[in-house]
Amino acid sequence: MLPDELELLEDDALTEPLAGLADEVLLDEDAGLPSQPPSLQPSVPALTADPPAPAADAPPRAPVAAADPRPSVDAAGRVAIVDEAAVRLDLARPARLLRAGWIVVGTVRVGNHDGCEVVIPETRIDDGQTFTANDHVTLRVRGASAQVVSVGVDARMGAAPATVGPLDEAAALGVVRRDDTGAEDFVVRLRLQDDAALPDPRARLLALDLSVPQVVALGVVGLPTGVARPVALDGFSGSALVSEDGSLTLSGYLEGYRDAAAPGGFRSWLVAQGAAFTTLPEDGRPLVIQPGDRLAIGSAVWVYQRR
Image (cartoon, rainbow, N blue to C red):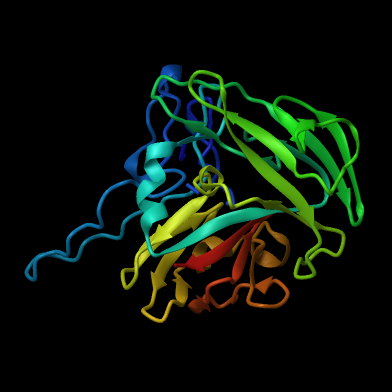
């Protein structure tokens, strides 16, 4: 089953865009809320073909608004939802950005709603499917110390239900995702990893197991070769162009990168190119990355792949 950091709706109004998971996502139709306007398409780009080039005598086509691969929410303005049919085109494209995990430190809630630091979307299979906001597990991470503080719904440690206490890092933390009948569909597996590239020495990477196709579909932005397209990743917004040599150029991100309220005047947007994470160019110059390079947009970590 197939469903990418959420345009969230609070009280029928859009909340401020965030800084992340892959991802076309619609509002829960059973909730009676309106669909998001085309300029705010969530999660992954829509399942439509790239628009045809305008005729030679036609005026230039206006830029297409970037789709933010963060799921929308249910009627309560909380549950993140990804429609599985929306990502098929992205999964088939020759290059892609995948949400690989999250940088975690301190107390971190893992759940399916916007109140959590780590948001794992639900997969909607049927238009009539509805969901409940759940906290799956709360972790406390500080360097080598990792504890399970609380356990909620559908959380596992290995094959067994998760329990409060020291985190067993030899066993993957699992979060169950269910189908439209309520039966278990697949398990999202996460594992705490040391990562010397992280900017905080006490932080660790809560990495997703991307060997499961359904998990990949929760956070994927597919990229064509030779055609620039708008992308948004957990608040990052810009243009992406994959070259014939496989490199990916990101540009047009400076306006969103600057934030007078943020420390230093810039949001936490980082890149790791075979070494430690460093800030994106603060003059907004195009950033060229290669397959295997990573982006950290806020706490969400994305990896660039080309097939």
